[in-house]
Length: 258
Image (tube, rainbow, N blue to C red):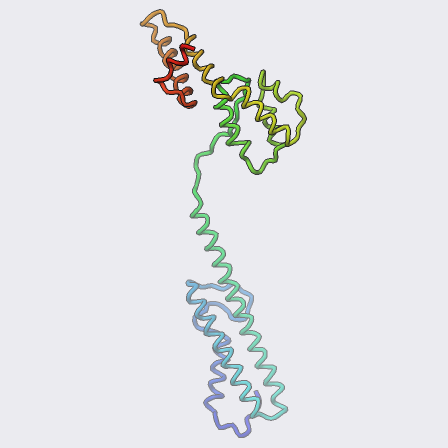
């Protein structure tokens, strides 16, 4: 450092040295200031506080340097400037190092919070497999509801891709609807329209379940528990499907008399 000419503020000069010392080694930050070693700290708040103090000391040091440079001789200014710039550079590097560590910590904490917020599914769901449809009107509603929710309303698929899926699921009489249709968007819409008209109309479905009720196999022995349970299940299925079509139990008579 150069000599002072006409300098009366010896305390300020000492203060400058104290600030330089503070820049070398802030008390609240563990580890070396000016090395590339990893920073060790217990609390991010302490680290942020140390960074703020270092920024303030750096600014104070710069002001003091500017004042001193005006008082020392020209030959000494150059050497003093070099030394001052070295301290400024070291302070800047360390401030950047602190900020880098803080950013990493915030990113790590954010990822940890996000992982905690995500539901942990311990049960692996089985792969969903759609049943093929053969053209039975009694099973059309069940088939269509499954297909519509998984394929038809799937926004990640275009209509041609949906048509490919649909073709693989149709067999028997239902397959005859699509057998000769070319794979394109227009034909996909036409295919769905035809399937609904041929197998999904309300009157067709109601008629099929009414016929099912009229043609139930009778149970010849009251002791045949297995046959009674089967009969009960068949009636229950038919009744519930009719109710799905808006046919209540009180209106069964008018359909059975037709």
